[in-house]
Length: 154
Image (cartoon, rainbow, N blue to C red):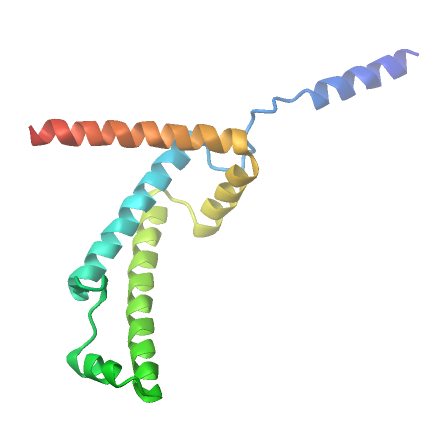
């Protein structure tokens, strides 16, 4: 009987680990908040750099094509559509490359790998209660940053 009670007590204490505990191989909420914040800013910076190199056609809101491609686009023949698609795909790839480089700089800054980040990100996606805490914390941080920026502008 003593053995049964001992095993029951061990089982009870083992099963009562904190449900709010984040596994050791997952990036904590506070650090993750800053990583996501910096990734968001890095993505926006990559987009700005891309738009400097590829001016936006304000009438259509799409990357402007070179004059020769634009003229061919108006013909609506299959060759020009293929060339236009290739030009847009190349432009998209350059944006993806800029974004990837910017994201890697953030990962390097925090001494993590892309895989570690995405593993942690998936963990938070699978745990809505912790994800809500993370996103609320991120939102509050963004609001504080915005307020500080406005104070500097006054």
